[in-house]
Length: 112
Image 1: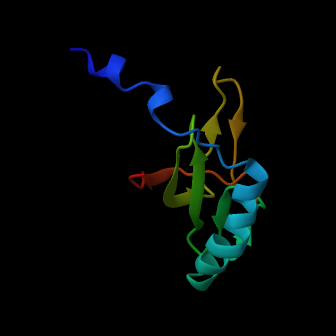
Image 2: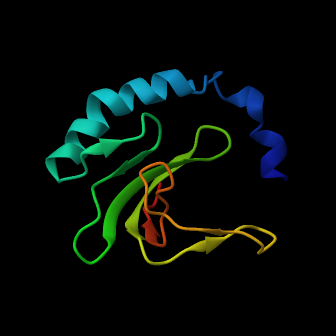
């Protein structure tokens, strides 16, 4: 007996994915105030929260990664002002010293 033939998409009620605008509204109402309380006072208006670089050139970052379907996951970690990254072809170096260019150099993804 093939379990996948028994349980198909018709066996579940139709679920609607949360739209990007609704997701951002939820982040604005719930996630942003919570992260502000722990010092991540800058939000890009979408999926990244961070603070300013400290004296050692380290910025703390939380990012939400959208996956296919209904999935997504938060990651947290650090962005370093002194570590550039390369483009896919390796011809361009990018420094991450501005809020717009903030990235995660060292991170952990939360289960979810």
